Amino acid sequence: MGKFSTEMADHHIAFAEKQKMFCVSTAPLSADGHINLSPKGLDCFRVLSPNKVAYIDIIGSGNETSAHILENKRITFMFCAFDGPPNILRLYGHGYTVLPGSAEWELLAPLFTLPLAARQIIVADIHKVQTSCGYTVPLYDYTGERDHAQKWATKKGPAGLQQYIAEHNTTSMDGLPTALAEDSHTIVE
Image 1 (cartoon, rainbow, N blue to C red):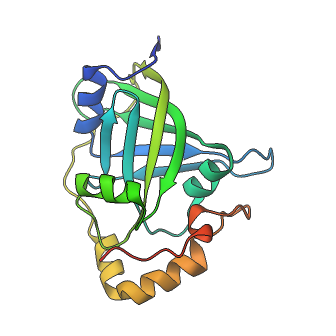
Image 2: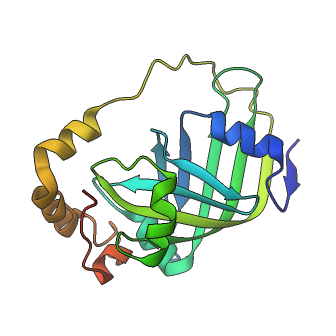
């Protein structure tokens, strides 16, 4: 049976920070729009307070999260235990995008090791926390991080990454603008 609270307790925070992967889900308001569910790896997630979290978002094939939270702010995070006792942690909140060069970026960026392909920080104010059993989540062994994103970004270089963002990251697959469409974004070097 799921348990709910209005903020993360210490054991929720410890569990989230231990996981090597989490998922982020967002959706547009349109009933015909596409729901987005993205797995995230690397050491990119930070708990800022019992009701606030952030993660470094790297350049990818799309930018659905930024578009959806720009439109309606809704965001959900999910953490699963793939080792140890079964557990699922969901964080429900309202998010926003922080871009390089902004005052908030200057405050948050030092909390992370920024990969070359860092495009934005997603921040969320959490209003509901849920835990559930996770009894059917299989056990997996963590063997390491993939290096494909770093190799891809290095090969593209700053100018190539900027061009890729302009071509692939300024609108969602449903045509919604992202925060990058409104900003003269520059790659973090």
